[in-house]
Length: 132
Image 1 (cartoon, helix red, strand yellow):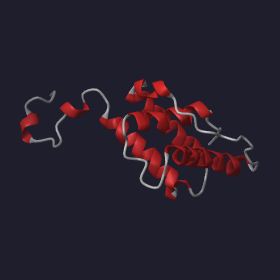
Image 2: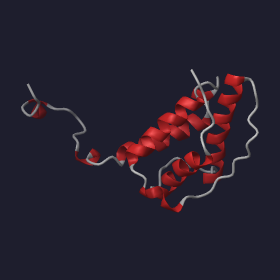
Image 3: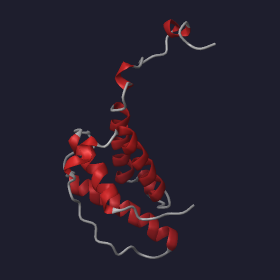
């Protein structure tokens, strides 16, 4: 596997998008700044463990006003990217950062066009409308 440190913009947009869509991923007492720092720290930890060298960037969250307009599908892809970049950190799956990215990802799924129109349960009713 490989790993890189995502750009500050990457994290800024994920957190700003979640804020714009009121994603329930900022449980008290976490603020958006704290969430962004947890994500950046997880990415830095993964890089440091993978390449045995510390990351010396000093990330500072910047709210991105237009992030709410980013399509949900792009947010999903950005979440997958961050998850991959963090996966080299041995504590990743148990980390708060992992839970936060999952929450953003979940919110993005619900924002996909047509999601609300889909059936919650695949019932026999649907059987007649499936392709053969």
